[in-house]
Length: 298
Image 1 (spheres, rainbow, N blue to C red):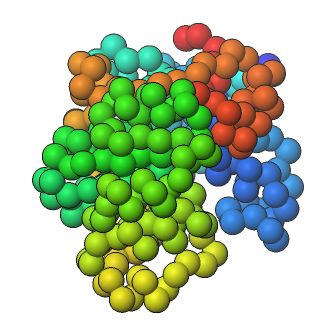
Image 2 (image 1 turned 45 degrees about the vertical axis):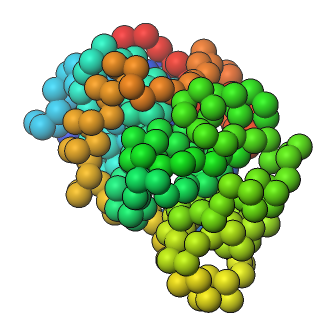
């Protein structure tokens, strides 16, 4: 790309630094009529969350050297004409940019904002957190004085959940979820990432008035139990909570990560050529931490 000469028409050139690999990206690769995401027309480049540095700008509000966070195409340089899905971001507390795509990025925001808005956490209550993005939720629940039950699909992930404070952590592939919930419940809060049978078991072993925070795309569940136990089931889109919680999130979470109070795990993939394998590992659940692609150094 001849980035010095390409016409910008009031836009800017962004050098991509880091890219996030997320489960939701699979939906954006489907045909528009089948995808859950509003992507119009043919998409020839993968789109995901990322951070880049501005190397040219004809936008009066954006300076060369500014860092932008948001939806980026998977390429080394991009011409940006709209900032609708981007915002200026600052790096504080000596954290690497990769963390701003994980615990201090959208996954962290999702956990923090939904927990603050919907959990109604009480000291001594029981939270059940399923795999797939629940690491910060576990730590938030412990900060609120809760007993935490957590499940994951590998022994390595189970160990990390124990290391960050889960009182009961188990491998759902080798241990009966029902037996665990029967023994350790009833549960007051359920953070759902998986739906299906696990969601039904959570309903079965939930207390009256429990809060269910649902991230999965569950097509059906035991509505009778939800009604009989007066359970609140809350789906959400994190962008609708940003206006209320974004400033609070950045004031609280990055410094706690830097101090070690909040722990995280990540896998760094170097170069765009590694995106395919990274996507596959996330879809299969074989990744051991938040997957971030390092595209370029500053």
